[in-house]
Amino acid sequence: MQNIKKTEFDKLLSIVPPYPGVTVFHMADEGKEVCLRLEEFCSKNDYIYNFVSTNESFIKELHESGLKKARKIDYKQQRYNQHSRLYDFVFIDIDFFALQKKELFLKKIYAIAKNGAKVLFFFPKDKGYGELERILEDGYFVAINPIEDLFEEYVVLGAQKMHGWGEND
View (spheres, rainbow, N blue to C red):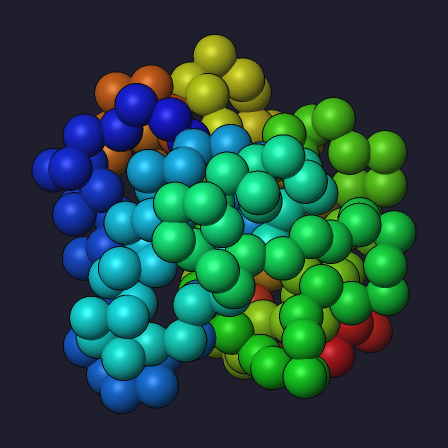
């Protein structure tokens, strides 16, 4: 996500409860300001923030801007998290529709999310999200809802991991 206003970003962060030990996983290939703001928010609230990207030059740019813990991943790797950590919030800001193995990607996201975790997908308003909703349902995510009025240029599709459902648990 690029070019989002601070007020839009603050509205997004209002969904994160003020509990200790919140864990946030963020995957993006662009949008330096969002990454830095999210890292600052997590640091200020003593939350754990893990950022990953497939884009090496973007990671280098983030390192130069002060986000030292940004790390490179590959969509083919077995797991996206480190140290078997599970996350309360998963922010996915990549071109999901360009992925070759969408269902496998979601299985890996399901595996790193805590039970009841919120998973948020961000994409431009001109993209439809029907395919993503179907894949999320098939992947044992529930409470799938679009948030179309949060950002001027983006739609957020939220879903929740449910405990004990399906073969992915």
